[in-house]
Image 1 (cartoon, one colour):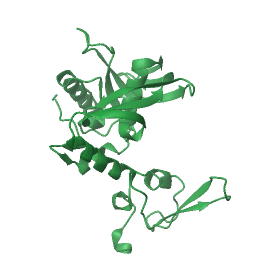
Image 2 (image 1 turned 60 degrees about the vertical axis):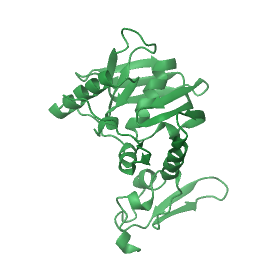
Image 3 (image 1 turned 60 degrees about the horizontal axis):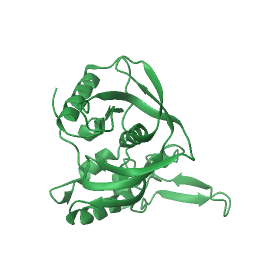
Image 4 (image 1 turned 180 degrees about the vertical axis):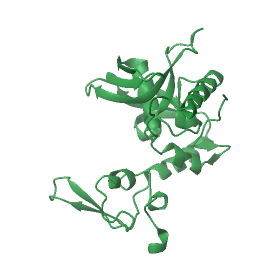
Amino acid sequence: MAVRNIKKVWDKGQVIRDNVRFLLRKTKKVVFPLTPKDKEIIVDLVDTYNKIPSFGIAANQIGYNKRIFIGRTHERESANSNEHEIYINPQIDNFTDDSLQEGPEACLSIPGISLNVVRYDNIKVRYYELEGKKVTNLFTGFHSRLFQHELDHLKGKLMVMQNVTTGRVEEREIFALYEELTTILFNPIICPFYRKENIVPFANEFNHICSSPHLKGNCKELVEEYCTNQSRTYTSCRYFDKRLVL
């Protein structure tokens, strides 16, 4: 269909907050059989992947809120470097805690920066092909890292939110952009409706309580997604009504 623009967290020396907010949203599950729109997303992923050099691209990186990503099948640059696989509704079913790898990662959505990220090495994964056939596989090394990086995108996570050890930037100006981005991602929770109570002193177990009239106190599940996620503040919470407190 078309080559799509990559949603970047910054461009031309400015952090693009709308793009950051979009990339932090969890993507929606794909339902089979594929709809015409889902097929269009896949074609756009392929067209964009073939045009822009990369190891993989998630659907939300080109503006689509669906659990799909495309990934290269070979780590090394070669005549077959454009060979790819489409992963629909990917997930990790199991991983080995004592098997870790650390290596450099770059991201089309965070240009000009490379980070060394610690990830699981051995993972058991599940995903679906275009016809809806389920595929299970064991990934290690390059394929494991690629799968986790792109799956993070679909979960609304950026690589800077993972276990980063070191990194490098291409230009000095990126330091300031990186600092602004991390401030957005890791600001403390300031929602006036949210309260955390210790269940048993010193046991590190808490109840998460929300007094928002929009939730009517029923926040057992939603509070984990909308309140304890430190990439959000009350200004981006869809249950928060500023007129009630300001």
